[in-house]
Image (tube, rainbow, N blue to C red; front, top):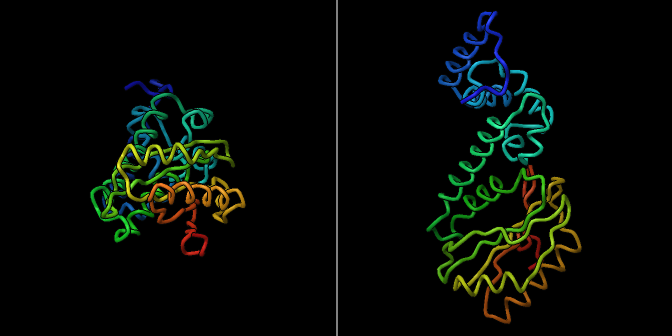
Length: 233
């Protein structure tokens, strides 16, 4: 894999010792590393022959945390100085891997009895996304997960929702119940009036078809809100 940054062959590779020390610290206790150093370890594979500390710190400064870097849109990652196609590819791959691991914790399980796993999955999938999106968890008669699908994707603070499309997909999958999940990129998980009205409209369509809406979750960077817990369902 080619380096995103040029290496100066006239100078000794001073970063070699740093890489080995960082790998050793990771082996002793991964949770002890700050976000930028964990990101450095990821970037070692993207940039095999250059110092990556500056790029790691620039990414954290731009997006705020390791999780937010991983969740950043590829086009926004590429805006950071020193970030080329190899880095964008590896960070996007890491985000996809994290999502797949979280999904594995709920696939084939009774969703309502695995609620913490559901929340973890939703936070991993949507919590740090920069664009608002609506996902729907389609459940069978035993509340097992049939499919998780992104139904809509919008601007930073608005997602167009088409209830008929959700109902059509539920019928195609032979679902008996659904859980609505959308994120607020602002981090504020307070439901808006539009969120509440949209949920009511979806419930009306669902009831007409004999489908149950178990909950509507709003996911933010630091937490979530549940319509059922708030008495809005």
